[in-house]
Amino acid sequence: MRKTIGLRLTAPLLAAALVPAALLLAPATGAAAAPGAPAAAPAVTAVPGMAAAPYEYLGWGNPQKPTDVMKATGVKWFTLAFVLSDGGCNPAWDGTRPLTGGSDAAAISQIRAAGGDVVVSVGGWSGNKLGEKCTSASALAGAYQKVIDAHRLKALDIDIENTEFGNATVRQRVVDALKIVKTRNPGIVTYITMGTTPTGPDATGKDLIKRGAAAGLANDGWVVMPFDFGGHSGSMGQATVGALDGLKAAVKSAYGYGDDAAYRHIGVSSMNGKTDQAGESVTTGDFRTILGYARQHHLARFAFWAVNRDRACGSGTGADACSGIAQSPYEFTRIVAQYQG
Image (cartoon, one colour):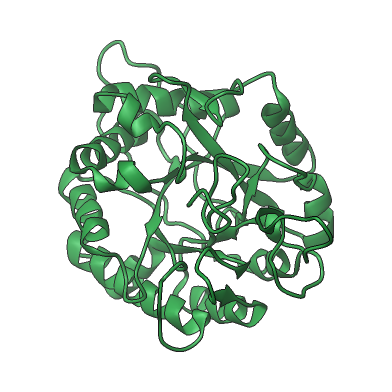
C-alpha cells in the first residue's frame, strides 16, 4: 500500500490497508514447467484463516510481536510487508534485509510455531520495485520464486502501486510472471492488490484485470484498497461496498465468471482509523460493514493496513504507528479475525 500512513509502507511511513479475506477457490494449475525449470513444489490450497491476514510491517519503529497479537486477537495469519528489489532483480526485505537468517525469517518461524502462517507482500508504494528492476517476466518470476522458496509460502501478495501500477509494460510483466509462478507452484494462492475509486478500479486497474484474464492467469484474489478516496458518499463502510461492487463487476466481465465465482475472486484491504486523506477515517463500524459483506459473498480476502496502527496514539507516537482515533488495542484485528471465508 502507499508508503504513507495509509498504504503498505516500505519505510517509516505507513501505508496500506489490509484487505478482508475469504477462503479461496483452489487455483488452477498451469502447464508443466519448461525443461530445466525448478521442480514443482507440492500442491497447496487456501486454508482456514488465510483469508483474514492483516498486514504487519516489521521494518520500522516498534511493531507488535506477532505472537502477542495472535494471543490477544485469535488471528492466525499475517501479511508481512514488504519485499523489494535490492537494487537489481533480487528480492530483499525492505530492499536491504536478507530473505533468510534475519529478524523477518525469525518472526515467521515464531508465527508458525504458534500455529499460524504468513502471506508475504511484494511491492508497496515506496522503494525499488521488482516489477521494474526485473526486465522480463521469467526474471521476475525467478525473483518471486526466491521469496516463495525462502519461506515455503502457501500464498503471495503482489501489492502493485505507484510507478509499477502506472506502467503498462510492467503490469503485463507482473501478470506473466505470476502465471509462471502458478505453473511452477501448483496450488499456490496469489493476490494482486491495488488502489481503487469509490466505484471500483479505475481504468488502469481494469486494464490490469483484463490483462490477467487475457493471459489466462488464474489469480485467486483481485484485491482493492478502499481509502484515500479524496471524496466519497456515505460512510467509509458504504464506500467500500461500492468499490467492491465495482471490482466484482470488472472481474466478472474480464473472466466471464458468474456472480458467485466473481465474488470469490475479489478481496479488500482496508485501513484502520485515520487514512492519508485529510478528514477521512475508517471506524470499527465500517469494518463490521465490510465483514458482513465479505461473509455474504465469500470474498477471497479481508485484510487491512495495518496491525502496527491498531492501537490508540499516545504521547510522542507518530501517526504511522497508531490509528489516530480512540480505540482499545487490536479492535480492528479482532473484527478481521472473525472472517473465515
